[in-house]
Length: 310
Image (tube, rainbow, N blue to C red; front, side, top):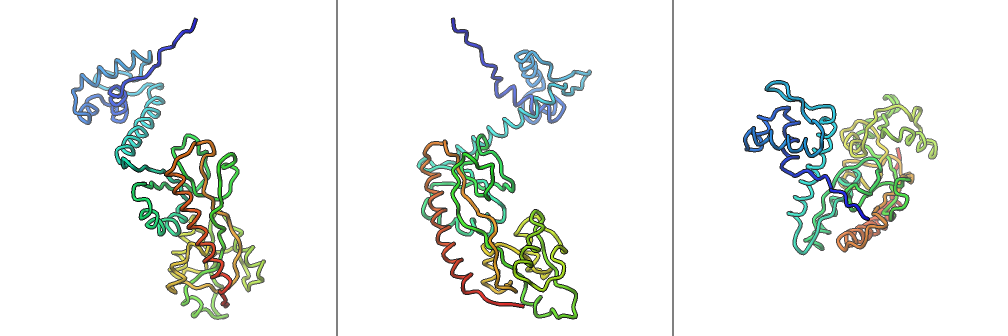
């Protein structure tokens, strides 16, 4: 004999009343927020407690406070309601004949490489909406809500569909004025470092026998975009992927004091391998690969023709 267990699924009204009451630690303030009576909120909470057979609030006269179980439950309910709201808004905003893609991107890659090119994608696919979220560290894609991730090579992508976009070529950049004002009598040139790659400058200096005495010293920054801004501000010489400093190099705000370049990380586009066929996702990934091919060809030509020195 098969026994069917009843699913314990509290109603949205009860969960909304509970979440608001937990946030305010008050039934009356929750009632004001929800535009219902305090009695209605109290009844919803009582029904929820009866359904769960757990006391969620401790009643102390006219005051209420969450029980130990209520504190843990409130955190989960809040996350669920926020996710449900996001998914509902996503569905409402989705064009009838199009779709929405959730993209997880590294911040500098997004602002310096991807976003300047997204106008071309919109022209080709006006009915596909792209939502971008910043992710600096790898993470499990399953259950994350993301359709596409753009990130470096990492073991976290094992079992996923990872396709290379381009390799980051690290180059030195600084303002032309910094070089013009520098003399041997001045203090040593300041090197600007990326915090999570503290040995990048040391390796660069060693590989090319550059006249730098202390390749470890200098300010540290979290993001390549910060390094580029610091270099533009004349704070020193930064070692950054050329892909992200294109605009500053083209306009002359930055120059390359040394023509050398070093290979950095490989940027990949990552999708779930077993996520089925999504024509919107496939269209975006293919467009991205095409854009990367054009960029790689252009960057290789530029790197081969670049030459300057201190």
